[in-house]
Structure formats: C-alpha cells, structure tokens
Length: 300
Image 1 (cartoon, helix red, strand yellow):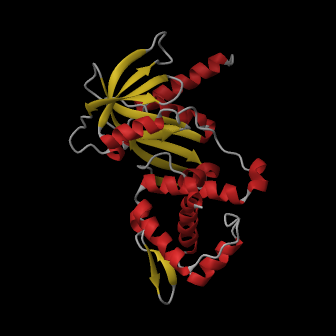
Image 2: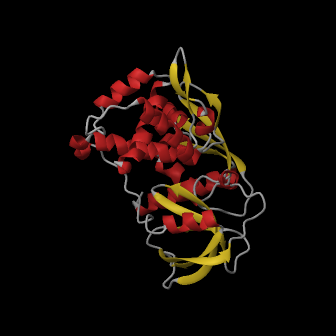
Image 3: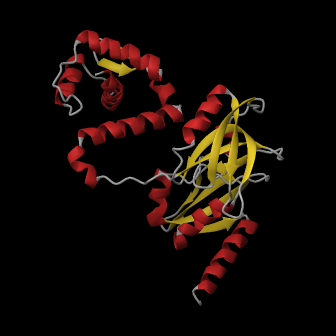
C-alpha cells in the first residue's frame, strides 16, 4: 500500500491544481472514481490530512482550506516559478494519467529521451552532495575517448537530450557534455565540487538558445515571421527574450537578445521560408550562406 502513496500525493496535487478550489466532498468523489483507486477505498478524513502533510514535506506544496471555496494550493506562485518542481509534477501527473488509462497506451505517443537515465542519477547525486565525478567521454568528432574530473554545475534538457554543464580538467571556462552514448562512464569522486560564486544556471543560459555556448556577447536579432505562423511563435517563444516589435497583416517582426550560435541558426533554418532574419547583417549572411549551400546540394 505504501508504494501507492506517492501516486496518491501526485493525484491529489493535480486534482486541486486543476480545479483551483475544490471541496473535501468533491475530492472524495473524484478519488472514488479514479482508476488509481483500484481497491475502491474511501479517502478518509485522517488519511486526507496525512496526505497534505506528506505533500508539504515531499514537494514543499502547501494545501490550505478556504471555508467558502474549499481546498487550494496556497503557494502556487512559488510552484509556478520553480521549473524543476513544475517539470517533475507534470511528468508524475502524466504517469498517473497513463496508469489510469491503460487501455489507451497505444494511442498516446511520447518522444523518447536518449540514454541519459543511466548517468543522470549519478550526476544529480554528485551535485546534491557537492562532489566531483570522473567522466569518460567520447565526442562524435573524435576517434578516442578521454577521461577527466568534472565539477558539475547544472543540468539542462534540450531537444530530447540531457546535458551537464561544468568545469573539467584543462579548461578554465565551463563546458557542456551530453548524457547520451558519448558519455561512456561516470564515477563518483570524494573530491569537493568547486562552484563559481553566485552561479545561476538560468542566468548563465539566458543568452543562448540551446546548449551550445560561446564566448561572445549577445546581440539583438530581428526575425520576420509570416502571418500564418505568428500564433505558433507567440504560443511557444523561441527564446525568453522574444519581443514583438512590428505586426502587419502579412507578417510580424520579433526581436531576440542572445548569442546566435549554431543551434539557433539551425532552428531558424528549420522553419524554411516562414522565417527571415532581418539583422544583424552578419547573422543574416550566415543564414544566406547556409541556404546557398543547401541549394547547391540539391543542384539549384
């Protein structure tokens, strides 16, 4: 039974979050109807309040009661601003949803994240314990692997791959490594992790589109988007710095403040003729050169 408590906690958080405010009676009714409740057990008052306490201890989520409106998430603003907790809860909620919908598994398709699960827990534990790790890594561009001590600063998920940013032997600046088949071994070390003073992962990556980092200053990049794609870009911005600067019936222009690295350039190219880089001129010329090479590849 204890094994199922964790799923219950997630179910309760998700139920209250989706409803905003909900009565104790409605929570009980929904629990009776849930497929997670495979024994048909009632959610007793004492059990419900024990769950509230466990949720606070486990997730840091405070469930309070308003006498006129019902139960609600009291610190929802904190939750909205915590990307890790949000991602974790969304993943766990989806897992619960699938468990409740086993007859629909073949109708729900996920993107598979490559083989990061093997090393992700090792690196997370090292970061938590403030220790280094010994990494054996082979880049796609090298014939042989190398082994070095890594001071892991942070982790980032990007386009179905996990990456670790950290300082490694022989380099003063942090470098990024993928937790896929390139990472051969990761061995925990007793050596203490040395973090830069006041390091902030979100701030560090704020000037980049993805995971490619460069020793360059960010610049303002203006991109024209055709009208029928504007709503897609507005609903899921390419970057946190995205600002609408012009709108016409035919197109809109967005401004971005970042370093135009390789992965951002290829993101722009993936949108084909729906996007056009207006400036700066140097970045526009890089895009033009890529398009010219593509045209050459196809004999145009």
